[in-house]
Length: 466
Image (cartoon, rainbow, N blue to C red; front, side, top):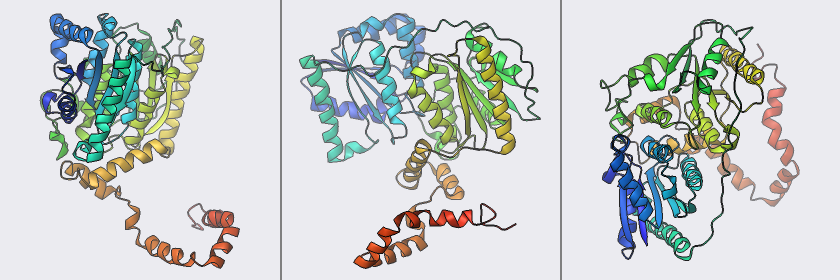
């Protein structure tokens, strides 16, 4: 059995994920293994067709393809994303058809599910039979259980391939969009009243649908709008995974390109942020991936807290729940307010005009109200993942995050709530008395709402009688 590992870490052989691959190679020596680093060599693959063709030849010769990468900012690294784009752009998808594939990522479990869903979806688009995924925490391999799970995962993948077992298709094919957008002028622009408004996009053609949407959205605001094309920014390369930013948020690219100055002086200073992009395979473009990655020089500290953020998408967003989850998860991580996500999945130009106009009005109103929506499971869960890792095993790696978390109250562990700990101990003892437990059970509903009833009885929501 020939296995090809498509390695998506910019760190190449010194990546954490590669150590998991090596472990599999050592435990399954009876099978042939080969590894191609696509993320660390992505510029060469773009420039040199012969190098790219050599990788595709490896794919054709393989029985099983293993996508192996870290999770970078809720998805796969930009270099791997770009390689997948090249496969489609150069018509090399047939090399993958009919093979079995699986995905292996390492991370701290922050939206690793989104990375695996993406890899499965693009695999199915390529005609691959997807046999499974494995998503350990970075150092799970040190544990007996972690090593056993890794071996079990690969055993299942090999069984599927050797026995040619059928695997279900999870993601439907994306529909083609035939709608031609012809906007009308905005009759009543919403005045942004001095709110700095930035539209960041990656349009590659002056008259592409995304370009037209960006221009029309700019008209929806009755004041200055900065429209900035990601493709024209000075961005030297993808995130290197070097973690030089971890100590004091200083990036290895600092002084070598214009990204950090742009991020700090434009995006962080904006009040209203609109990110606009086209769907490329199952996500936004690799240029957008590069943007999200390079923003990690702020590490796990929110960049856009309190800002109004919206997304404008050209493409079949309603068929891409995973993309929507990534955008929502990113916004909550940044502690911004996700006003909405507008796509061009409409039946008439007037309908899209109306949605873009309404988006501008809603962003301005939310900014004036100072509104930021509450976290849901995505935001609460993600924050706790960061909190636990930065307080624990990653504190010495990310001291800048630790300082911010300590200062901002991120370390809100229940164990630090001493009055509640004392109360719980007392109540646990009391509730061991059958009569007390029965009395409480009879009034469970009333007891649950009692703290809120007291607030209702107060003239002010905070209990202040002002």
